[in-house]
Length: 321
Image 1: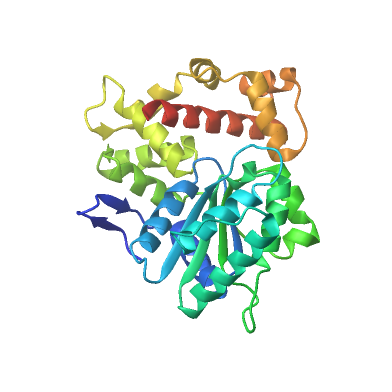
Image 2: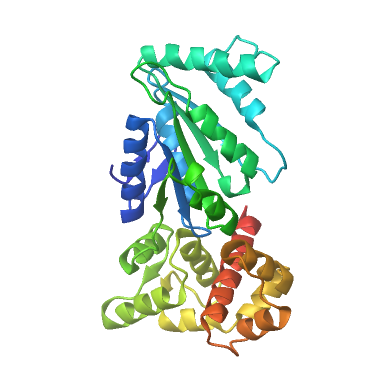
């Protein structure tokens, strides 16, 4: 799998250690009809990789049947809807039976037929940390559909942010023993610079450029979204002429985290909510304020600042869209 530009579709793929690892894990999961969860930080490239994989599969409809299911914050199970959509994907003109039991066994019949035709069926779930516990638990029932010699009839690929709630579900044996997990690593310095240059940022030559690149990496959150955010801020400087210097990076850091949070209307309560979602405990408003103001160097304070930066980067990305 190499970085490539498809001029017909204008889709561009940047290869990193993470994309190679994800691609290999997904390829193995599809081959074995496994249930795989790809989990990573905000802006780590989960949706980017999901879109690339779905695009590749969709280009080969003779061999792949792909169904995308978004994860929404909804109570109750979405199993009936998922089964209905899977039946439609496997048999376009067919109406799904109304009662859930008949729908379940009709789906099994269609999956068996597709397997006999050597088709690979893949259910892709984005933002799966937002799926209800009931839906995730009932996906197990779907994935247990089988036929002689085939313990599973399709693959489940889930993408999720780090989340204490989904961790709690997967830490139990009922689901956790059935789901393989792949965690996305942070970008290396070389990869961060590679992304920055792909997005049009140049650096000085020689020692000055090496210093600027190191400073860029030291002050940028090591995810594709983090790099995109820093590149955008540097390019927005009046003094920027196409080549990033150490002074440019220092200039964007003059706007501290507190000001950026206010600009994107991110409250201390929002940060507390996110911290609780990730780590299962809720910091007080005073703890968050002290951490954002760099008045605390505890492990919790560092996590709070990381969350604040992530939320700012997400706010910047949403504003750009």
